[in-house]
Picture 1 (cartoon, rainbow, N blue to C red):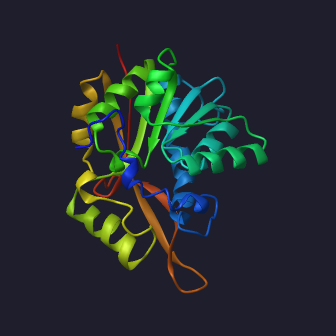
Picture 2: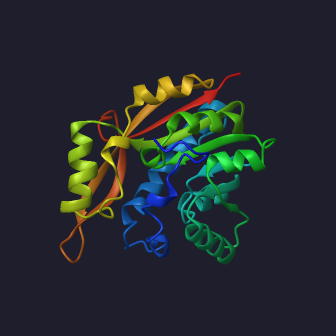
Length: 254
C-alpha cells in the first residue's frame, strides 16, 4: 500500500497522458461526459434530502469540494448551479486545463493541484458543506487515510458523495475487461480491479471517521451505436442493481 501523505500514487497516474482529452466530448472521456448528467441528478437529490432544499433549487451558498476534479467536468456543472466550488486534483496538467476552461466559461472556480492530505495541511481550518469524490476511490492506494482526511474537511452534518465501482465478478467483466478492451469505452489500463470496492467496505471504513453512509444507488449505462458503428454510452439511468457502478452518500455526525 502506498503509505506517504498522498492517497493517490502519482507515479502511476493514468490521467497524466490524457489531460488534453478532458473537454473532447467524443474523445477518451466520452463516457464520463455522459455520466455527468446523472451525477448531477444524484448530487441534487442527496443535497435536497439533507439540506431540505426543493429538488429544483440551485445549490446557492453551498461550499463544495470536488476531489479528483480532473479537467473540471463536474466542477463546472456544480458552479453553474450556484455552488461555491473548489476543485483539487494531483494531475497538474488537468488542473491547468480546468482553470483555462473555467476562465473561458466565465466561471469562478478555485482549482488547486493537490491531493487530499496536502490540501488539509495547507487549509486546515477550511470546512465544506459538501465533498464529492466521483470516480476517485477506485484509484486510491489508501482509502483509510482518504476517509480520515475527508472527515477533517467536512462540517458537522456535511455531506459526502462518492461514485465508484463495486468489486464483483460482473464489474471485472464489464467495467474493466469489456469497457477497456472490447468496447473501448474507457482508456486501457485506467482501472485496477484490486482497487474496486464494495459499498459495505466503504461504509465500514468511513464509519471510523464519523461519516455515516445511508443511501446507495446503482448507475446503468444505456448503450448505443455511433455513426461509425462503434459502441458508445448514450446515457445512464438509476437502478437498484449495484454490482457494477454505484453512488453512495451520507453525512458526518460529530
